[in-house]
Length: 309
Image (tube, rainbow, N blue to C red; front, top):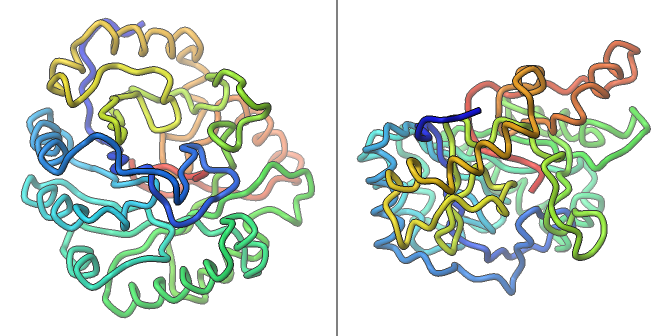
């Protein structure tokens, strides 16, 4: 059981709940009706400074759709001044000139979700006609500008192996010049939760939440990760991150996770990545691979981000 303060090295910064899409599986429930939340520009810039003081070296800006937040370019520049590596997890449908300029900085890269090589199937997932074409256009633009890219193929829960790995999405992304491609499954949170009003469960987590990482949400809540949003450890608008990391609420949240995920179960999962797998699915996935029925998913390198958005 954890007894020492949380020592984060990575942070998700969920800077907005606003999104131009309405993906049917969004764990955050983001939509065009969402907002940027209560965190101000000054709050986010202060949080970046506090993360740097705590030793965080990697941050991911996420949403909602982070590219729709007017403060994102300034946040990227601030993170880089603090020496942090930056990833922006975007739907890649809405990127303007000021943001492209920030994304071209050294130490910054773009990540995105991709659902299918078939435009209709992709647009069905996002709830927005034309989103597939806009994402592809900005993938090409990023390649032209030399912005590093990471693609994440998101799979719904399926039983037919031939339908896995994004319905040819991997080949499609390779043809577009994307070389870092991972896969993940839809998580049972937000709009993807089974049953309206059902309380969130730990079973959909990878078990590494709160292990050297934390998330800050648009309302200031600090949680072990973006999926475990019900395990609030404090609020960045009311306390410093150092106080939160050493606080009783953080210790309780980490102990609750530790009780649900014994060390052996956590160590059996991939390192928490954009492609971190729910711990409950790892045994099933390993059995599929042994029987030759698995989709051949493989985690991307690094300790960043999330998927299943």
